[in-house]
Image (tube, rainbow, N blue to C red; front, side):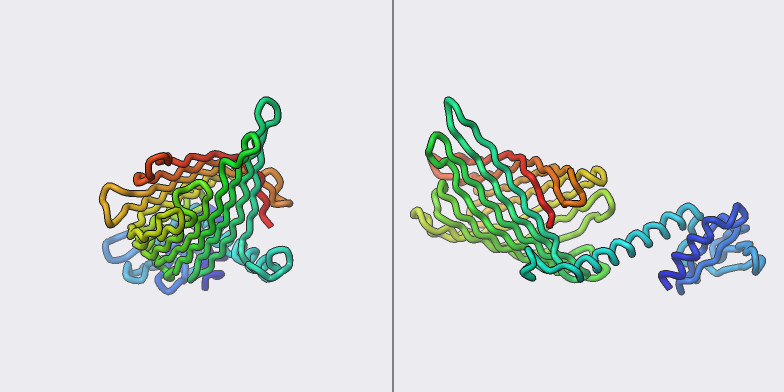
Length: 319
């Protein structure tokens, strides 16, 4: 029925000026023609073959002009083609480097390196691996990030983190359930490592060709280990994720996660990221990415800064 509706809408759009509207019935059928009269209970339309028809409002799902019908048909066909292309791509995928790992998932590696040699010597390296998967019922996101910096022979930053998020999607619903787990290791924190986990509910505010905006709310906590700070902190989570497609070759991604402590109202963490990605070679899956990130910890101990701000430029490879 979907294909019949799409075909009918396309044909109707090119049938000439005598067919100005399309009436979509609740059973999926469509009737094309000139609307002659409308009332609270019925609509009268002049059909080119059947003549004047009076249709009860209770039978009508929607009324479109042909421009709307054409746009809807094109959008439906584009969605179908994209779904078929994605299915074919996933079926042919052999996984990461042919190993079968993350088969059918989107995979991305980014690497950024900068340094200086002269009066001072420094080098900064940032490597990131990201993979995600989504179907009608599940959405997965997995990230690994490693940053290391050396200045005049001394290491000034050495940090690794891995994070997994699973969303349970509900058909025809904008809300969803989710769970998140994260591991962090940092040579320059008061703790040696931190493990956190959260569960909650999310809401998809919008998802179209330009904007993808969703929110999250949940509860969980983090466990710090080492450095004399072995403790568990109960936290809430409030987050927003925004993806904006500027053009076919450019996009912006923004996230902000607030972690208020449920043990001390004055304590909270806040993590913000912003990334701008520019495609440079579509066939090879190569892009440039420029980004900033900041992690604020209101309870940072004496001698440690409350803000950990970083910025970067990286080469991205989708494979």
